[in-house]
Length: 124
Image: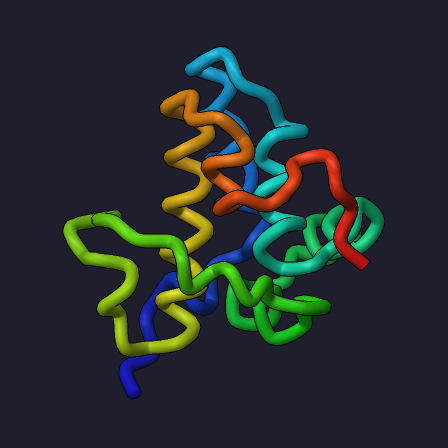
């Protein structure tokens, strides 16, 4: 299995770019946090801890409390690749997150982004 450079990249550095991207399109950090929480199960404190400790992407996903089983419903192209066809499990999780953030930036409704989940519901 190839070890991609992104795996060792600090989650905090990419998180800042995600926030910048959505804010340029008049969306919020809270929306980014919401999709991250939906995908990974991190609560606000856990997410802030991951950012503060500057864990890499590999660690961020390895320590994710609970990947959302509906993540498999995320379809489409990101960075020239269909997310549903990416074979490396870690790369697929990273691209799922990229796709969700893109959808926030494009202004999709949160219920659609969260694949039909109630956007106000809090995951355990």
